[in-house]
Amino acid sequence: MKRLIWILAVLALGAISMAQPKVFKAPNPNETPVIGGDFRDWSTAGPKTFNPFVAKETSSTDIIDRMLPVLTGYNPYTLEPEGMLAKSWEVKNHGLTIIFHLREGAKWSDGQPITADDVVFSAKVHADKKVGSNSIKSFEVDGKPIVWTKIDDYTVQADFPKPFAPALIQGWYIVPKHVFEKAYKEGKVTEMWGVGTDPAKLVSGGPFMLDKYIQGERVILKRNPNFWGVDEKGNKLPYLDRYIYTIVKDRNAALAKFLAGELDLYAASDADQIAQILDRIKSKKLDATIFPNADVTTGTNFIFFNWNNKDQWKAKLFRNKKFRQAMAYLMDKDSMIELALGGLGQPQWSPISIPVKQFFTDDVAKYEYNPKKAAALLADLGFRKKNADGVLVDASGHPLSFSLATNQGNNVREKIAEIFAEDAKAIGVDVKYAPINFNELVRQILNTRDFDAILIGLTGGIEPAFSRNVWELDGPLHMWNYGPDFQSFEILIDKLMREGATTLEQSKRRDIYVRFQQVVAENLPLTYTVAPAYNPARLNKVGGLFSKDQITSIVGQYPYIETVFIKK
Image 1 (cartoon, rainbow, N blue to C red):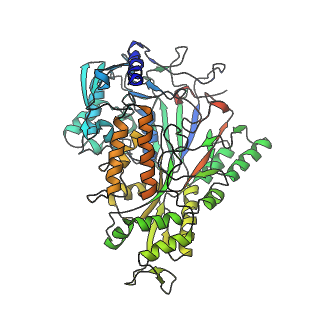
Image 2: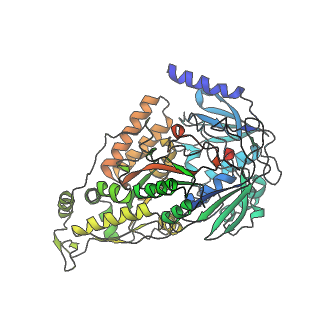
Image 3: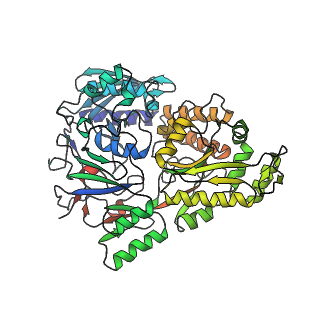
């Protein structure tokens, strides 16, 4: 209890902070920043939307993240809460009320002020179940709503129904009310800001705004002249003129562009890619630096099955724990690490990313590669004979066959899927593997539900409570089973996620999330594969980046895109 009081006292001190506009701290005070230039990034898929209420895939949110503000986030140096649009806050009522003070003078790209009206309106739309925002879980605690109220033009109040551990992290996107309100009232807010929208109609409150989107080729963002951030000397940010996403076929194509000096940052996926980069550097054909095995990546890769399959035979099979255990025993993670990651990676067994030490545990069930155990479990389910094609069949002659997809262009996932399919085939399981476009993959998961199994990943983060959209029963990304029939372990996970979000004492939170990981690992709603090593590389002409000893996979190569620059 004493620790809780101390935490709340420290949080309340944020109220005396009057930093306005937002000051972004560069990682190297000895560097002299340069104004202008293009930063060149990449993606294997273009955005599906620019609408934050619709976006559920990183191909869209990576772009939106550069254009729309949030109230607060994590300080990249300390991982403590940090004000963004909110310049300060007050914690009251034993943590149930937080008053956020906004930065007066902050403007949208069209010159309109960013005010409490925008914040409260955005919260209302995100929380509207009819809209279906992927951030909807950020607006309730234990099933009860968080109430957002305007106090004055630059003050908003959030009232929580229960204590909420990550209450100071309000990372949901804020939109201009004057642009979205009419469509929301007409029930058409989800139709706003599609990829065909005229860039001039996309109003930005972030460091960049959309200049041009050439579908299938590139997204070009340009500096927002009204952005409300400055560096430590008071210079307006961002330094960059443009942020360019090039859409490439796959990771190998991205590597080729990096080796040619056409991309500014890259993270090598395996030892072969590291060797190629080092060879180009040593031959003086590339002025760059790489840090092999700097960390383990955050995020997770996993296979999951469609429990709501339209084929009732498959739906019943996928819901059977013995089937999922058998599939887990067919995952040769050592081979996945060796062949897909070039030996640089670790097995992943549970849903919390390995670098998140404050919550991660290795004390979970591990279904290590064992085809004999897999075959025995399948025999228990009635798959004891094979047909003329060598595929296991049940007593009625039904073959054990299902499709598996992953996102085309992600070479690591493609190789992992191939290894799994080959090992499954060896014992008589027919896995029909085919990669497909990432946005189509997301459409199948969230809309059509016409799939058997999918290998995909989640980006992860340092706060487990923000994965409630996956693990609570009504979460929009509860992707293996959208109900209404839930198993007892799913109900337990839902309970644990609610407890973890509303428990403030760190040691108790850890205990809750350790149990959560154990339940997931035992029951395998998602079957985890491997966690790649983080092998960041950069062209040496890029400034504003972390030094080697500052780099972590949680934060990446730079603290803020606002302070990245291109050296002359």
